Length: 326
Image (cartoon, rainbow, N blue to C red; front, side, top):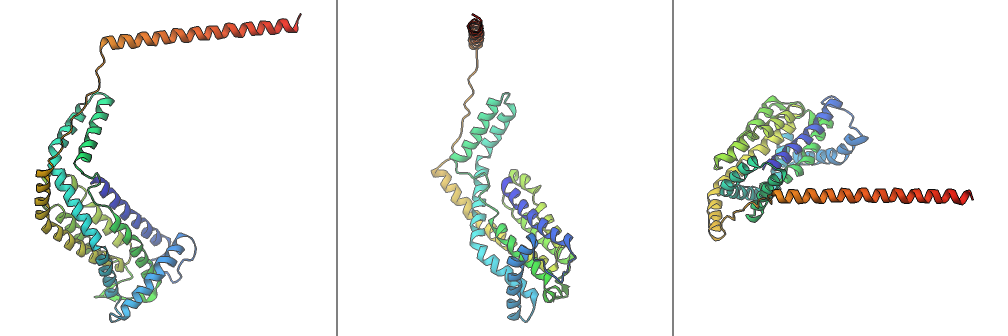
């Protein structure tokens, strides 16, 4: 679960780095698009195609670029909906399975704290891995960041399209200037993703809620930062995307009781497999004495070999001197 959160934050951080880098390099509106370097590559392969797509969509939506952005969000979300629902379902199943093995996890964690040697700690960690493996529990929580990664080039292209196209930059939607940052859309995006994060905690065991509650604020804050450092068009993209995320989370929460029942039926047929920790072999005084004697004998033999080598080397040197001085 922590790995999944880390990947999500890393993806958002990458987007923030790209967009803030673009913003700091030039003013918010540039009349001349870059043609060289990484920003030239981004504009050529992401910004210009996105600009053409938005112009085409706007021509069919009353020449309104705001509705064109909303249409792009809807298209992308509908394409990703099966993947995202499948991943959210897997994540929910992993959460329910984690709740079933929590007593054993707590026991292993307590034993890990009591372990006094590296061997004992390693054995407890192996037992933890075996517990996950034997009960088909994924360490990543059953969900990845593919849906977010696939959107990274989309909102990067959207950023460039609005920034370097005068028509898109000067467009307005419901009184909001799409080419300038909008505190309203930034706050709405923050609230939408915060609500989605809160909904994702509904129905979870208290132990998992404590782990996830500390992380639920970071993604909305990162999105707020991106919206405040870029155009309102991108803020609109995130806000509508947040609405879709809320709906998807609500659907999976409505489906959760059925998943719980399915997992409980599976647990009856395949109960949780407990793990036992194989304690490392305890060394006795006799073992220590034997090891010390063997080490001492090895040192004596090593010294004898060194002395023999030194005598042989001395004989060879004397023989060489006699050969040169008859």
